[in-house]
Image (cartoon, rainbow, N blue to C red; front, side):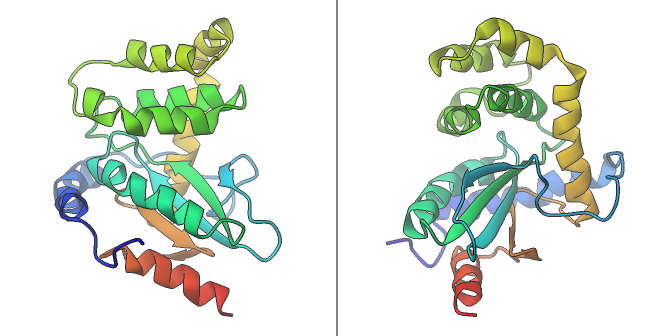
Amino acid sequence: MIPLLLSAAVVLAIIVFAAVMVFIDRAAPAEEPAGPPQTVREDSHVLDDGGDGAVTVVEFLDFECEACGAVYPYVEDLREQYAGEITYVVRYFPLPGHYNSTNAAVAAEAAARQGKFEEMYHALFQSQSEWGEAGESRAELFRSFAEQIGLDMAAYDRDVADPETTARVKADLAEGQALGVSRTPTFFINDKPVDLRNWADVTGAIDAELAQ
């Protein structure tokens, strides 16, 4: 059973938001998305598709964010608990204060081009303690994950080097900013932002939408 209150680790991680916000506030805004901002785009990465009538849950995340890493097990429980009832969508929001957040997102996007976004998503979060907060590039470590999940490495290397891959990451960042995202993780339930104070805010919002 998912506890109603966030664990001590998650609460501690959320406190980090305040420090992270300093970087966000000082960062130059990303390029404005074309047209009105949307929580889900045609090219957004869907981990679970609940089909017609499902509640859409969108998470803007940073793979290096400690709070995102702490929430990750809760997200996995959520996906199991609401299987068939929710469509779970992940979007990139790399924070400028994290050295490898964009590198990680680019690795995930390169994996997505080979149909293995979720495998890289899990690899990055499950190893976050190994590379998070590093002051140098960990792109080679991410490349080793690509090998482990069975990617075509020549294609992976081309995609990581392709400016379009980074542009795809930045497009999510820009749209997140246009939607008012300023920290990670940020959740939207059927296009409505969640004020995340405890995990019940997420499950309660889902339950409310399912009850309609």
